Image (cartoon, rainbow, N blue to C red):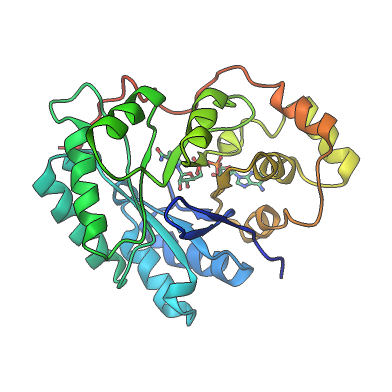
Length: 279
Ligand code: NAD
């Protein structure tokens, strides 16, 4: 079984660079999907309160027989819980639902800069959660540099991670460079743009040259750029395929060709305007 490299976060915690994402995996399919991923060798699961499948993620880990401390688990604070007291309660509920002693990484899912709760208040609640010791690292998701700068000037703990949309059609290099300059690890969500980049002729040509699949080529591009990735699939063959990234390499020209596909195209919402709060 291939060994997945780890990346050291700014507080010393090690995160496996490749994980398994469970966004849009229905709760009734989640135990099976996570079980498959663990069997294949994944030791990093990315979930969120918003995905509605934390209970099933926890169940799959417990039933796998693998020591839970060997599986890196991330969850995220949902948009309706940005006030301090709500955030503390939401974290407790996440821990109850996952049924784990410790969470590896807890993120603010979206900054929601236009709502009536300031994300600086939310980050201070994240700091309290971190100080409580049940969470090994805290971070953010979908934060732009100007959001991060406010955290730097008004709070104490630097986010360990910024999870943002990144794929060949949205290289997001400005945010990635800012993260890197401030010891924040970038995690690339929707790494294959939910499948949209897989038919791109530049990508299929590289895949053909290497005898690999387009998904493997794109995921390998992320790995070589140094980001953390967690592709999602409920199909065993694809789960295996997406894990087999460490026995081949893209050369500089192939990396540059894929990077050249950037067209600033999002598949998801814009973090500066997204304001969805579930009621
Ligand atoms: P993704 O880019 O991982 O694409 C997933 C889709 O691509 C699957 O539904 C499947 O249809 C297809 N696919 C997967 N592997 C394939 C393969 N080998 N060949 C062909 N098709 C394949 O998209 P995603 O699920 O949106 O993103 C991955 C993870 O990122 C999520 O599960 C979640 O954990 C995280 N995420 C986070 C945020 C955020 O706001 N923080 C937003 C979206 C996703």
